[in-house]
Amino acid sequence: GENVGLHLPTLSVQEGDNSIINCAYSNSASDYFIWYKQESGKGPQFIIDIRSNMDKRQGQRVTVLLNKTVKHLSLQIAATQPGDSAVYFCSRSSGTYKYIFGTGTRLKVLA
Amino acid sequence: DAMVIQNPRYQVTQFGKPVTLSCSQTLNHNVMYWYQQKSSQAPKLLFHYYDKDFNNEADTPDNFQSRRPNTSFCFLDIRSPGLGDAAMYLCATSTMGGGEKLFFGSGTQLSVL
Image (cartoon, rainbow over all chains, first blue to last red; front, side, top):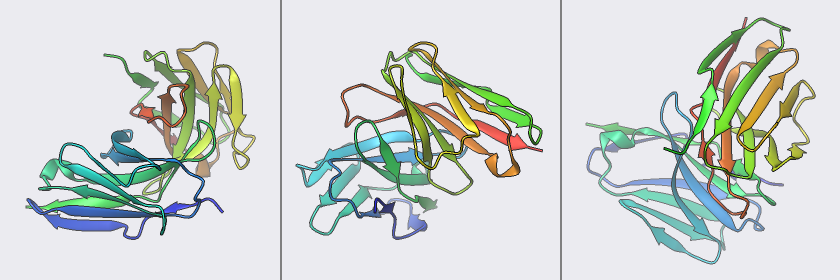
């Protein structure tokens, strides 16, 4: 069945270290994946996306890796800052105009 | 700035009393979505509109309805709210291209007393 799930519900990282947030999915038909950041009391905010014809995509301080063989997606945040503290969701396309969200990982940045 | 606006930010209703949540957008996007998000959970898609075409999720209760009178506005109607309907309701938009990111509003936090 369709599923997008995360391995860890909470991730604590020291300020300045790199963060890696993981996501597993089960439906190989998805061709578009997105990472969102959600701060407390706000709506999700787009971070970075990747299409299924790519393995890696880089943004400012963020990198998304896609491994279609094992149906795994990861978000890497370089030099994690206090402002990165939030819940991170992976999301994937499911049919036309429909997007399903994974469980979410709470990132805590330790001073 | 172009954006997605949800009103009100907080809404309190009584058990069984109909309530309407509002969403407007200045992005001129064709697709509008309503998601329900309960505490510490992922957003769950309730339904979406592609222009005027309504697409309901199979597991969305009949208690939830939606209206889209024009491109800019979309409403979520909860006909008889139950305690289990207390949640954050998120409105989002995307372009008609498919495979595009969603733009979210700040959400309406609904409490049911």
